[in-house]
Length: 405
Image 1 (cartoon, rainbow, N blue to C red):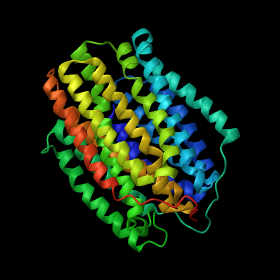
Image 2 (spheres, helix red, strand yellow):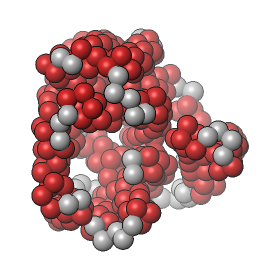
Image 3 (tube, one colour):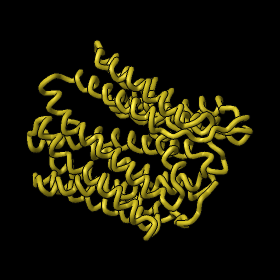
Image 4 (cartoon, rainbow, N blue to C red):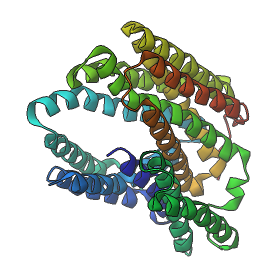
C-alpha cells in the first residue's frame, strides 16, 4: 500500500517532467489531475487488497505529473531572485494539505470506513482540476525535439528494479526470484540509460547536468535526509499505538504538529535563503533534523510524550526549512529549458530515499514494543541526517540576481 505508489511516483516523475518541458506544463498538469480524479474515485470501489493496491498505484502514477509541472509553472512565472520565496509558499501549501488529511482521515476511517477517503480525495482533486483550468499558466513548448523513448524505458526499468529489490528484499528474502530479477534489472537498466543519454541527440536527462555538482549535490543530500524523515514518519503511528495505546483519530491529531512546522519553516527557509545562502540554510535544516531524531528517540524510549512530540515537530521544521532552497538550487542549475526534468529528477531521488528509509526502518521495527528499539531506529535516522548535512556542505550558493536561460 505504501511502497507501490512510491515506486510509481519515483519512476514516472522525471519522465512526465520531461514531457512537460517539451509539450507544455499546463497540458501535462491538467491531464495529470483529470486522470487522478477518475482513478482516485475508482479506488473507492476496490474489491480486494490487490485491486486496492493496483488502483492506488495507478492513481499515484497519474498524479505524478502535477509535482514537476507545478514547480515548472511557478518558476516560469517568477524571476530568479523571487523564486525561493515563491517555492516556499508552494512547499507550505503542499505540507498543509496532508495535515488536513491527517486530521480528518482518522475519524473518517473510524466512522465511515476506508472507502470514503478515496471518494473525498477524488472530489477534492476534481475541484482542483476545475480551478487549474482558469489559473494554470502555459509554459513554452519546444518544437523539433523528439521525446527520448529509449531513455524513458531504460530509466523506468532501472529505477523500478532498484526500488523493488530494496523494498521487497527484506520482506520476501533476498533469494526470492522476483527480488533477484529486480536486483539484476536495476544496474542493467540504469547502465543502458546512461549509455543512451550520452549517445542521444535529445536525451531525457542531459549528461552535462549530471556532471554539475550544483545539480546533483542538493538532490542527493535531500534524498538521504528523506530516507530518515520518511522512515521516522511512517514508523510514528505504530510507535504511538504501541507505546501509548492511541487510536487512529488521536494519532492523527498527535502527528499534526509535524506538517504544520514543515509548512511554517518552509516559508522561513524561503526568506532566509537569499540572505544567508543555500549552503547555510540546507546544513542548518539538516542539523535541526538530527537533533529532532535524538529527541524523538529518547521520548519514545522513556515514554515522554512531550519530548517525542517536540522531536516530531522539529523534524518537520528541519525538513521544511530546506525544501525551497534545494528546489531552487536544482532548478537554477538546470536552467529554464529543463525545469520539468529537474523537478522530476529531484522527486525521483526523494522517493528512492523515502523507499529505502521506510523499508529499512519498518523492517527493523517489525512487531517490537521495545522503547530501546525505537530509540536506536531514530538514531539511525539521525545518522542519515548527518550524512545529508555533510553532503549539503558541497551545495553552491546561487547569486541572487542570476536568471539562467
